[in-house]
Length: 349
Ligand SMILES: O=C(O)CCC(=O)C(=O)O
Ligand SMILES: [Fe+2]
Image 1 (spheres, rainbow, N blue to C red):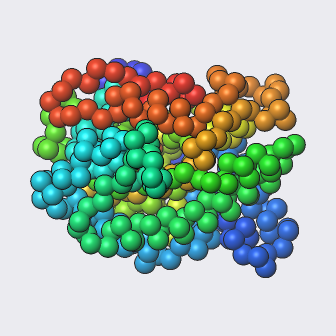
Image 2 (spheres, rainbow, N blue to C red):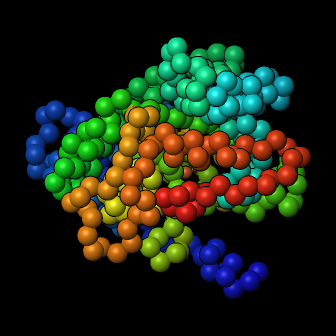
């Protein structure tokens, strides 16, 4: 292993901060309780761009059921999963992706997935506006997922509101409020086999999901609690912090659009997955996204002299998503991975 590799593999013993969102969900809370949440959130967003979220109100049995549904879906025969392959969806982003088909930073990820996005009735042809492909089994996956999304959408709105208070700058309330008016969303069921798996060629192993930032608003990650040391989050010094699951908490992170809006005061932090355990890991990120029509530029009150500023002056969320999803994200098994998609905001995958 080269020295550079050795450095990038180092994980630190730091842990992510914990934020309690309940004061923003409970109408009986006091303003000082909300202020306390906002202040912790501000620190978490500046220092890490990642934190554990508690007090979200999503029952543990609902979360466990989602993980179980994921497990059941991935255990189905290959042909049944491939019946809803992404390549069969109208807009080519919804449905099942085989192990190794998802590409990050020019390399196949060692995962299989089921990608779900908000649907727009009547508008089927445009990119990201196609019809969702749902599996026939487990039979209640669709209903459970849509209920789960409803619950997390409320939490997403509350967290955006808390974030506006946390930032506390001129125009932040209006800007965050606008982002959540007609939110888009995505949800992905993921199965990561251990990296030692013989399901994929040796030259495609090494990392389960490559370094990247998320593209939109806020990601709420639910993951198998018994699997440790898989998700890693980059700190300001380039070290890696383990983001192991914490009981009853979501691991939440900031996406590119909030990064742009706050001119990098709140960071879209780079993360990756290296799953060396000895059993499968199921994870379910929920992406609470801006409206597809959002065009975002840095708040004037955030433009100043505070270090690294974002490399773009204005970004259309829809175009950013299309750039990230349609330029070689999915590559059929056996085909050469030809392109490295570069994220124009984070310069990652
Ligand atoms: O599975 C995980 O822990 C993280 C997944 C992730 O980062 C993503 O899908 O964007
Ligand atoms: Fe991610």
